[in-house]
Length: 290
Picture 1 (cartoon, rainbow, N blue to C red):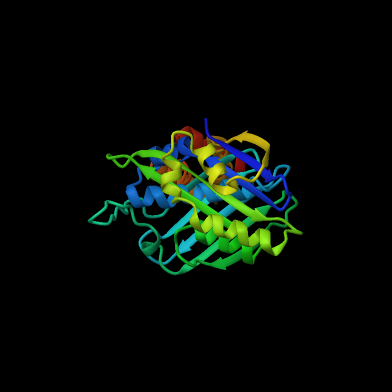
Picture 2 (picture 1 turned 45 degrees about the vertical axis):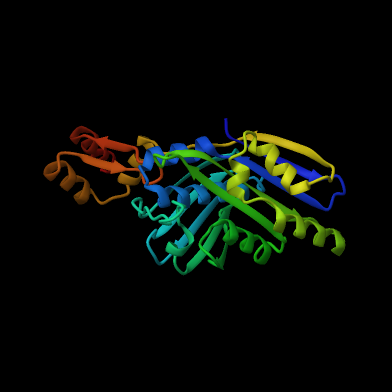
């Protein structure tokens, strides 16, 4: 089962989240049938959003939009404070690897654009923040957003590793943040440790990558585990929700679907589920509008 583990240094100067999102990203790949690069780009975005949502309380929802002008197009994700996330990528078929190593490439094909976050607290006044994409690698873009927009110096590592058949093998990551009052020499010490830590891909490849990530972040420093909670890919779409969308259409449009198309077919972008509305379903909606 996927999970996020929250921790804090015993000094109280730093906190870290570490995540196992393997099943989450694997489900997304299966639902959207993404190719290698698209799988990694979408997966990293889902992980980034789960990190952001883990900072929220109550029934808040966080929407992340990675808006690039190159091969991937836009990547959209929505997560809530319960650990549930959904998302999709505009171009599912990007599959570009380094010839020599077979490494899946992401950043160079995101292009220029923006990292947009929308936090909906359920009050009707969502908060939106936008920062530029600095690399397209998603983790670096998230760290830049946290540092610039939320004024919280952060280090972030995210990745999705694929097997020889380009299926999701493991996915996860970490976020380390400096807390108020941290002395400069302690910040420098952690910065040096992060710079020297093994590549995120090698840590994720460990047998227990949650422990490997925590050990790499804290080194010999003591820390406390604060919380562990589940994560999952979950889409809250339903036929009833799409029915509510259809009923907002003019009667002429509904009648045209009924008479000319003999029904309607609606596909959920976030999870790929298709909902069918028969002629009788549409007739009922037409009568309800009347």
